[in-house]
Image (cartoon, rainbow, N blue to C red; front, top):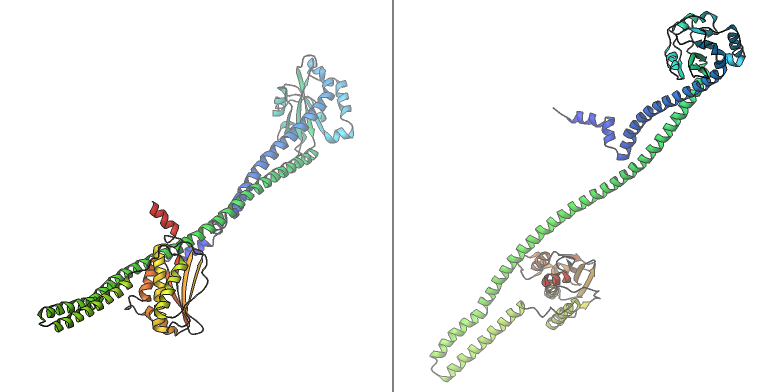
Length: 483
């Protein structure tokens, strides 16, 4: 079963896209939802608390106001179950003005047993009803406020259809504090509702402002962290790619160094065999010839014959010594330990001029740090081989040596103006073990490389480059020796 269509469909989902976005975007979406939910809950709770406080404050102010008006007029209830006509007349007079009627359209006075002793509705006076909850709380000394229960008996009798705000306030005897009655006020809800709505709006605005400030602050912190994480991720990714490239380069150089070392070992072995062949074909043949001449010397029967054999032996000895010196000269290097790069270049050019009579132009050599013996030998052999090949294949035409040192990299180049196809011919011939082919293996074994660049005038430039930042550093070598 193919899973690609399902994976594609899942990747198109909003959640999948959200998880693939930045951390700040995820926080903005997810945190915004949670913040909106929390804001709704807190706003609702805060609005309820504020609304209750508004209703309670309104109820307390109305109750205290009615207590001050009706309290002195109901003192007869301390000794009588009903109000006097004078008290009823005065109560009617208090509530007869238009302002009081609009604010308090209905007013009842209850006795503790649930009897209504005064009401603006005459049909309720003297009737007993089931005590409402607010009446019970007021008889316990509280000021109670609640919206009218339209199913209550006293409201059904009057056929109420408006849920007024009912405020119950206890009426006491001033001297003893005894509760003798409860005044019930019906207050219009429209002004109260406006006040409650205003409180709701203010509370919601406050909660929204606080939530926005918190959200903005948190988003700023998360966005900054998200950008930092993104930058660090990009840097780590770049470092990982660089490390991977460096690892590949190290593996390539390691493989190259191993192949170069193996090739150098092979070339050294072949070089030893060639030296053995040179010794066998040269000095050994002369010594064998001398041994034969010694036998003739023993058998010589005259002085003249002995002289002739002795001269032959002497000539053979001279030839053997000359060939031995030539072989030894190829094997031995001049003293290089105390020479700087300029001294090494000067030594090689002097030897080349003495051997060929051809001068070599040496361009300015920059500041080069002290070199290790391995680097000195490699530079000497490189220059020696390049000059020899130039003489052998190109006639030493227009030879120029240039040395430079930049960023811990040593570059030594030899160029000529002769035929470029013959100057570098030994490089392409592996059978020439003492040529540039073997020298390239020596350079690569030190971690460097050798390259050939054709020149516009038909000449050729051969350049070697070594990195002196690692183990080829002279100070590093000295520290290693001291350890």
